[in-house]
Length: 385
Image: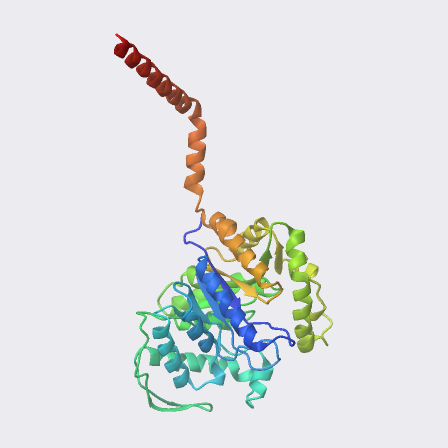
């Protein structure tokens, strides 16, 4: 039995084909967020990318500001702000303002930036990104606490920098991107944040889960506190339907479209993802394309690696049409999450209890009915007399 309830969310990069109208793509992304809010998902994250043509959200903050006006309860996250591309003061000020616009529903996710092309167009060395992520988090977390910062490095120069408006949340949640290396776990612990594990079921990423969580816990211990597994988000590919055959039919065309994007990045690699069929991902356990039972089994597999992790984020790559994506989310909320969280244990106990006493209870009911008839007949006889 879990010590905490598992939350369900969506991680949206996004992935949109080159032939599509970008305006309508953004609109559909927001529509999907609104639906996730309506059926009770806990979180929705938006990525930041600047090159490549498919991942067209360049500002997760703008998406969150728009989504906040269409939703009521769901928490909204930057997944992630690529800190090396932004002056830390500007980032801190945007995050503080956005926390107010979302009425405290904001989650601040930070990372070094994934695409080398995004660093290249800024004449930045992508190999320095992890160092800049650490430096940026150091400044931003201090600014969001209300501190004034005077500091100069090779990529920012701050003089009495401060946020004139602080977040409205008592404690704004910070999450750090983590994939294969232990760097994300170290920084998450250093800045009292959560881990956003973007490669939770990928080859290498799944094997690194336990090790990176151990590193994060050890680092947190050096800072005098214990990390809570509920702050860990695991990102995975998952689409479900009533049958495996139906689920596979719903994603096949979209998967091939997205595979073209990966081929554009890594098609020259013999073992790169561009050469994988959807069946290959399913066979290796990297993606679940199946039924609610298949989804439950995958979550149990992840729990074995990282017990009591807090949130499962479905990596939405637009493999399926909107109506099928919504249906998949509905099945996750109706059947998968209740099973994982034990929401129906007492209902089952009550059902079984009633079964064990049905003869007794049915006998009492029949006796009660007989008494009612007897009383009625006695009343009629009395009236006749």
